[in-house]
Length: 183
Image 1 (cartoon, rainbow, N blue to C red):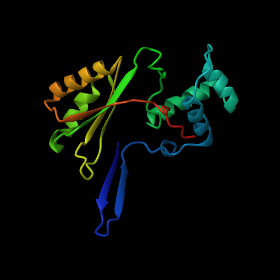
Image 2: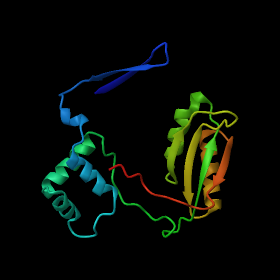
Image 3: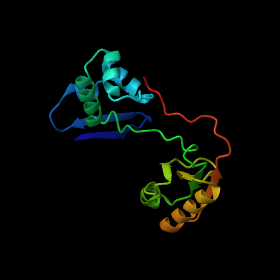
Image 4: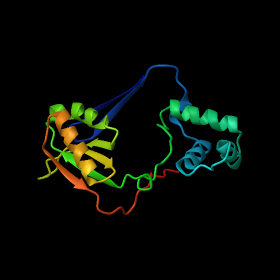
């Protein structure tokens, strides 16, 4: 188990106390150049062939077995959270989305966030700090076949969490939609 304790110092500096319980393996905290190459390839499109990892492993200069073992280790170390297909949602008939910003009492944010995140139409759900006159603190990205479907999901969420103080912000135009590339 890993524990991180953050302590606020009087001069607005923070100190961190890191504890780890379990068998220590220095590889848990390090990413070598081969790991970076693996992550680089997994961030992009995979070749649509019978054994795509064998081809990528060969390009990196390792065996397919080592490639797969390293991917598994990256997952166990929680460096890789998941990996999956990217759906081009417009081509699949999901042509609308909206960011919905909610004003949620602080003591209900975690519960409301978990409920929102459970909706399959919600792809992102984040809490953000309230700033200035903007009092909304919980945000959910809702996807649907059209704007009306997204509005319907927002109303269902409002009913489920028992809060109707939200603003519905439908997307008008997409300028960029990509996953981050780290290596």
